[in-house]
Amino acid sequence: MGAVTLILFFFLLAASSRRWIPQQLLPLQSVMVLGAVLFLLLCLIAGMPITRGALFSVTTLHPVTATIAGFILAGVVEAAGGFIVAAHLLRKAEQSRWLGLPGAIFLLVNLPTVLAMPCGRVWAAALMPLAIVIGRNAGKALGNKAIAPAIVVGFILNAAASCGPSPLGGIGMMGEGMAGFLPHVFAKHMQWAIMLSTVLTMYISAKICRIECDFPEEPFSGKQDMPESAWFACVAFFAGMTAIFLFELPIPLQASLLLLTLVIMLVGKVGIRKMVAGIAFHPITAMVAGFMVAGALVVSGGFAVFSDALIQVARLLPFGYVLVGLLLVYIPLLFPMPCGRILSTSLLPGVLLFGQQVHLATGYAMAVPVLLVPFLLSCAASCGPSPLGGIGGIGEGHLRLKAGSMVMPQQLSLILGIAASGISVALFGVLSAGPGPTQSALMLGSSLACAMLCNHLLGYSIWHKGGLLAGLLTGIGITVL
Image 1 (tube, rainbow, N blue to C red):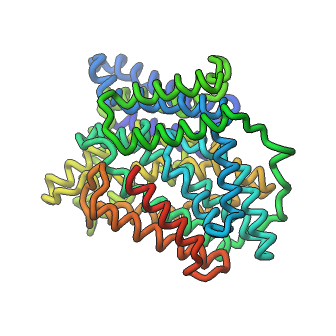
Image 2: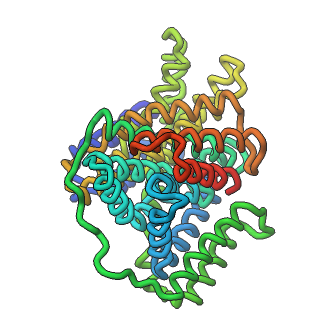
Image 3: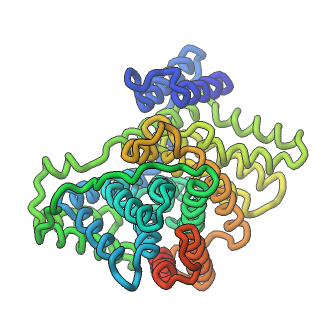
C-alpha cells in the first residue's frame, strides 16, 4: 500500500505541474486534499489501522501558527500603506549620490531575503511595480533592453526563495523543527545562497538567455497616497521586525507578531475587513493540503517505502548516496509548485528518513542538514519558475514577455545556488541563530562579492561605491536579523 500511494502521489504532482489536470477546474490544493482522502480510503479498504497520531505526526505547530501570524501582520501593513512607503524610500535611494542606481538595484532585489516574510508574494505584490520602474530607468540609462527583465527576474527569484529562511513560519522552520534543530539555524546558509542565485539569475537573463523587452510604461499613476499612518506602519513594521529578529523577547514569536499587528491596526486605523483583504490565503491552504497528504502517506507507509527504495538505489549505484541526494534536492525544480509548502510538507518526512539512513550507513554526522537545507531552499524557490501561477508569471505579464521566458534563468541559477547552500553546510556546519564570526564573515564576504558582480552586470566598475555600500548594508542586515 505504501508503494501504491507513493506512486499515486507523484502521479498527482506530475499531472498538476504538466497541467493534465486543468487548474481552473481543480486547483493544486484540492488535488492534494482529494489525494489524501483517496490514500486513506485505500488504507481502510486494505484493513490498515488509521490513528489520529499518525495523521498529525508530520505537523509542526510552531511554523504553522507563526505563518498565520506573519500573514496577518503583512496584511495589516499592506492595508495601512506601509509597503507603499517602503517602495517610495527605495526610489529615493535610487536618486541619492551615495547609493545611486547600482546600490538601489542591489538593495531592491535582495530586500525580500533580508527581511523575509512567510511568503515571497508579500514582497512581490508590494515591490514589483518598483522593480519595473527601476528596471526601466536602468535600461534607458544604459541603453540596454535586457536590463529591465534581468532586474525583475532577479527580484522574483529572491522573493520566491525568501520563504525558506523566514523566521515567521518559513519553510526552513518546518525542517528545523522536524529534524530537532533550533529555530533559524538553517537561515544563514539559505540567505547567502539566495543572494548568489539572484545575481546569477540576472546575469544569465541578460548575458546568456538575452531576454529583452521594450521599456515598460510607468506602473505608478499619479502621486502615491502616503498619509502619516502609512509612514507609521512602515516604521513600526521595520522597527518591530528588527526587534523580534535581534532580541529574544520573553514572549512567543506569535504573540510578538500579533501585538505589533494590533499597534499598526490602531494607529493606522485598519479595520478587520481591510486586514482580511490584505492576507494571502493561498500559501496557508497549500501548507494545510501538504500536511494532509503527508499524514496520509505516513499512515499508508508511503514514506517508509520511499526511504527504503532510495537506500536500495544508493547502494547499487557508484556514488549512489550523492546521486540520490541530488535527485531529492532537485525534485522541487522538476515539479515546481505555486507554493513550495506543498512539496516541503509532503516530502519532508521522507527526505529526513533518507538523511538519517545515510548517516547510519556512512557515519557522516552532517548528512541530515546537508540534505535538508538545499531541499528546503529548492522547495521555497520553486514558486518562482512554477507554471501553475508562480511569481515569475506575474513579472512576465507586467513586462509583456512570452509565458515561460523567465523560467530558464531561474532554474539554471538555482541549480548552482541550491548546491552552494549544501556545500556551505558541509564546510561551516549548522550556524547559530545569532551573529557570530563565522556567519558574519560568510554573509559580508558573499554580499560584497555579489554586489561586485551586480555592478559589473550593470556596466559599472566593480568598485562602484553605491553598489558596494548596498552590498555591505545587505550583508549586515542578513547577519544581524
